[in-house]
Image 1 (cartoon, rainbow, N blue to C red):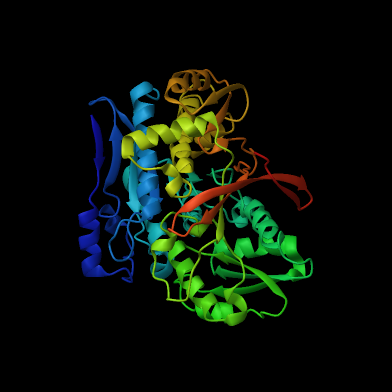
Image 2: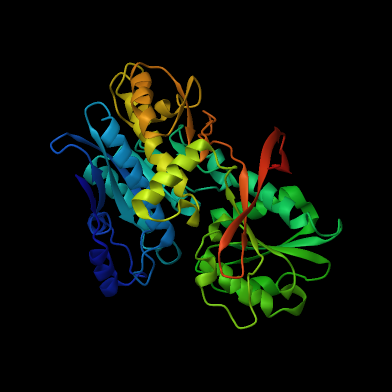
Length: 455
């Protein structure tokens, strides 16, 4: 029996009354309504092992968030395949998902903080999944002191690399150190050597980190303007950049913010014709669906996401996803990362309950399990591979996992895996089309090499 118990109407009703700017109550009981989405699958009566997740499922107006919807689908696919092909130590995996309702800009980190407390204190959760950098930063302040594993789908801020996290914060997405190098490369490939690059970025760990990463590559060639996390004052951020000697523009924000950026660019004659590049936060298929002024466009704009030329593992995942949901996982960024995140935590649970982990399941043993998925016998995240991976980990052996998002070669000290990048271009009908791939090599000492991957 397949069950996804979603109470979006309850969440929408709650916010129709309260509004997204409501002060968060001092206790965590408010979270029950936000955490009523449960992804469950498997044999009735079998004990469950719960993973928590804190994601943006609905937007302030109550509509489903496109990224959140695709994350849910990918996580559901992972739960289905895990529980249909191998129970984890006599238990089926279940995911309890909490909805931030896009409250980062209005409620600050209080919403994420209290959702994390709720999952831990009310449900005894030992592993929590988050999405973006800001929420991950907030959640780790709750999870790390309580000894709970935190694993992010799409947090890319460089700040996360240097957390004093006791080895409990991991992420499938690569650090923005690499994305910054790719954006710097793209923004300078077709402009004069002395031309400058204007960067307009949201004020957040994500935006601030990417500006810093690009500045390391571009130095004084980078001119930056920033705007608040609420998405206001984007016009002012563009106006703050000196257009003299400017050759290209980079925008860091969400896809609705990118539409505002296109409008702002169109109002400044010296910026209107410059090529524009977008960071991964705006690299979604709904990019062209947001309101544009009559003379504004993002036609031909390029955006980036972590990715590599399609592997057999990704192609298989995409086919299974399309068959189940009649949608292309490539339509939203980090869909395959959401799938991999659930699978990785399940494998960590197998390690923790086996001889290597001495049967104890907590954040520390789960983190230790994640240190055993990047070496040993190679396996792919495919339904037929679940049983041999679980069996090996239960015996205390390591496995070398290739996920739908690529090779998961985690650095055991930072909990991060590197990645190459895919470039997409926006077409005249509003569609994003894969354009090219770039290989990224960390040479150490702050040096990063970026080069096109030849087909």
